[in-house]
Amino acid sequence: MMDTSPDHELPQTSKIDTTVPHSARIWNYWLGGKDNYAVDREAGDKYREQAPGVVDMARASRVFLTRAVRYVATEEGIRQFLDIGTGLPTMDNTHNVAQRAAPESKIVYVDNDPLVLAHARGLLTNTTPEGVTMYVEADLRRPDVILVEAARTLDFSRPIALMLMGILGHIQDWEEAKSIVRRLLDGLCPGSFLLHYDGTYEVQGEALQQAQEEYDDTGAVPYVLREPAQLAELYEGLELVEPGQVSCLKWRPEADVFEPKEVDVYGAVARKP
Image (cartoon, rainbow, N blue to C red; front, side, top):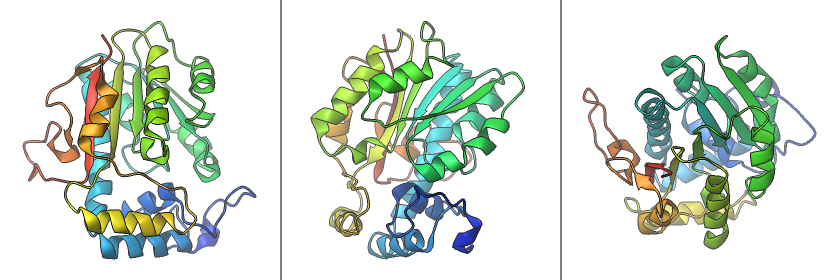
């Protein structure tokens, strides 16, 4: 059930703009969270009216994150996670999944949204005694700063799972987006992984593109929907884990869930050789 709590229950800081919808807060709303404002719920409802499959996209994205993190922790032995553009906490956040699989896991979250940072303190205490969960305030467009700050917690001489979940669509220029990913990967040792998904328009087509364009026109930070073939360029030079880049619910579907289902979010897990 979607939460319609009054706005005053949310953290208030001078940096939070409650007059313009925000993608992380709308995503939180679609996932049934309470960390959103009226402007976000209004924008989310309008988007969903035009492209009803967007809620499936949000839920599939969370399913993919859970499966991908669990996979690299349990089957690849990864104990360090760098989650950039983490968004607002919901259920099964990266540290929850990773530390369930391996309690000693270290997680560094990176975001530059003040509402996300307002929740950081709670997440920092919600960790296993053996593990570490930290937050870095930084912008995706400054990968060198991210690497330096993350190195205060993570050991870059050992493999790290770099997580870019639904964030690259906020980089309008595709070459810039690829350059950011390459710079981040260059900072990681062999045996590290890229865990990534982003929005496409394969299923809902024009309806989804129109909904996104109208959302962008509200003054919110725009998001670019891209074709899977374009997103696949991010994995050049990496070793894709089976089944490769697919619609998110098709990535290692659970036997007891009615899947796979096509959604407009494509993801993959890839190893740095």
